[in-house]
Image (cartoon, rainbow, N blue to C red; front, side):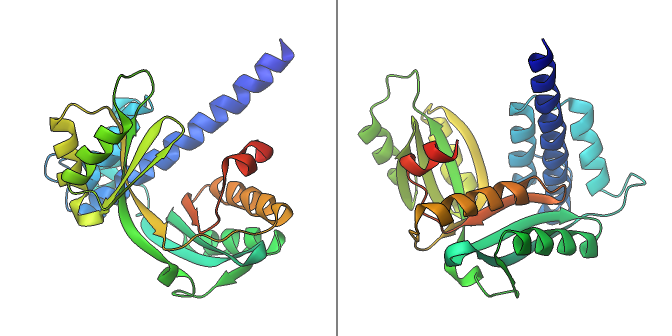
Amino acid sequence: MAFIRRSKGVLDQRRGQLFTKLARDITIAVREGGGGDPDMNFRLRLAVDKAKSNNMPSDSIQRAIDRGLGRSNEADLEEIYYEGYAPGGVALIIEAATDNRNRTSSDVRSTINKAGGNPGEPGSVAWMFDQKGLITIDLNDTNLDLDEVMLQAIDAGAEDVESSDGALEVYTEWTQLNAVRQALLDQGLPISGAEKMMRPRTLVQIDEKDALQVMRLMEKLEDLDDVQKVYSNLDINDELASKYE
């Protein structure tokens, strides 16, 4: 029972942290996407859909929208990207949503330094990544043919498709994400996610010890309160992922 209580505590903490990040996604989407109506603000639609899929309460979603509209007493959030290098020369882009730029910068830099990496200046690694849209299609428990779904995605305007662990990852130009997503929905495909992401132009392979260290650093960065997502150009294969777990 003690183990179960500890585990539940960790899960509740993770869920609380997840809801905080989802709320910040919504608030930033309102500010950056041009309003609080999901039907008129596609970025907000993505953020709200993601929040609902993670069982975030409706009143919490509305509070996040109100914050973006300036209707709350909470400080304004801004979206900031930090760059740097992890051990082994792996490039990192850290997406943050913060109401205190100095605090977030200090936390990010300290975390990277402690892990043996090097914080970078703006633009130091951004050229290695492209802003893309990512649509995930769930292929588990379906009778869908992988090759056929790939062709459907390409016909819908996808730039690239990759299969991974029972899912199909569909990459699009960020500006075309909504159109491709809607085309796939119209075909009845089971879309489990749609989001903005920074896709590395090329992946790097490093020795296992450094790779595991990079993955630990990425997890520590993602655990920071102000960090939304962490992107890298590390090539993480199935064997490496299983050893990390």
